[in-house]
Length: 601
Image (tube, rainbow, N blue to C red; front, side, top):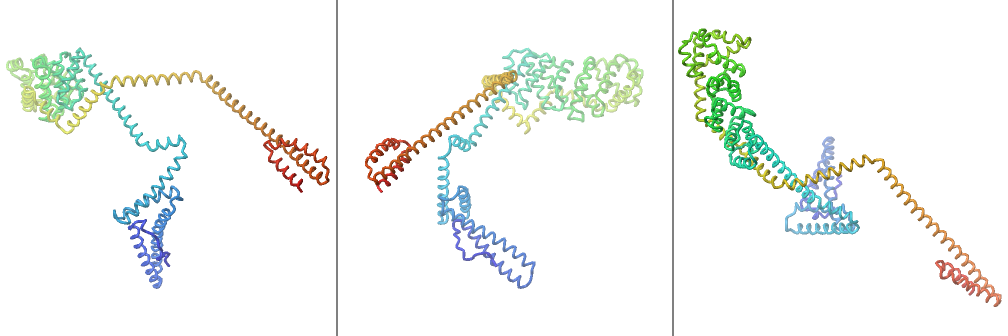
């Protein structure tokens, strides 16, 4: 029932012990299946019988595969010199796989290795025979295929070096452009800007030197021209940008203008004044829900009136912090507070009359401090509990008057908070360290470390680009010349397309005519050779037949005893002797030999 030949003598050692064990296991499984099939047939279980036959068929198939593989390897090893390259490579792969099931150093392992060496030697022999018949182009192509990985790696490395060099030169060019802009806005010379950039490299910051140069350009726009002022502005502005990154672009320019308007820059210097304002914003934005952009924007809108009223930046930002926490719009809030401050001076009597303030006390307080006078007014409004008393103040604002009244009401209802925010702001302004502390925190994060690492790579690229710039300049010039040559060539072809087409057609026609003439000449020469050969063959044939005829006549004359005729015929035959030296003498010799035989007879 089974297709297994249990007596098969297949040499399985070449297929490894693993295959041999597998074959024994499969044969045992097949034998068990055969017994199970007999039992199922006897029991009449058709479903089980069908299943067992299917399993037996699959088992026999696997056995056949293993035996065929072993036979195939053995067959190839017995006729290596006759095996095709495809079979040799397949056998080599099979032999290598078989090593996985053998113990190193065993007899089977050594026999397997010896077989592998024999197959490899035969493959090398075949490859050597094939290479002997290779043309030069085929050998070059094969070498290129052998070297293609190395060549591709070399090409990729060269391309990478070129791209890295170009990137470095671009980085140097960008940095040089920013330094040129610094000279433009600050009026410094090249050596001063270079010294400034050396100072930038000493700053411990996550900000790149290119961005620091842009801050230096802002300093130039603000009228700062000395290295000390520019460097101080850059250091302070960088700390503010890192610590208060939500301020947005151009914020440091705005804050620097504020310090100038309120006179803080003249009193404290560029760097300290800017750090003081930044510290106020950082402190207030941490103390409440006020945002840094709102504080800067509100103070900017209040700058004109606030500076004239001799208020300070911390006082104005204290109002801003409360208004932002109360959800008041920045535009209307600044407008309302500015109008109240102006009316405290312009409409002083009306405000005193409407609120019932002590005129003498209010005016003395206002004269001493605008901020204290405003706080006194807000305190009185809170006591009255009715903001409508300020309606005459906002009557000329139309619809916005009601909204402005809401702003003042928000301040009056949170007067204690206003005082506290102003105290905190004044303290932060005096110390000027809050923004620096926040900068130190933001400058030591993991992301800051990555930014500093990238900054270091950029600095190395800039230094390398400075060295490579002359070389890359020549490369770009060469590329430009190549592009110009290509452009000129294309233009020339377009402008002379008809002439070039005509010349091309004429050249092709000339080549065709020359080739046709050569072919015609060769054909004519071949025809002449054929004709000459045919003529020579004809003459030779005629001479041969004539010689044979003379020999025949000589034989007849000999038989007749006519010696005179024989002598005459012999003389005539000698004239035909020249034919024996020609290319067709063999034919004549044969005919004469035949005649000689006849003569003998």
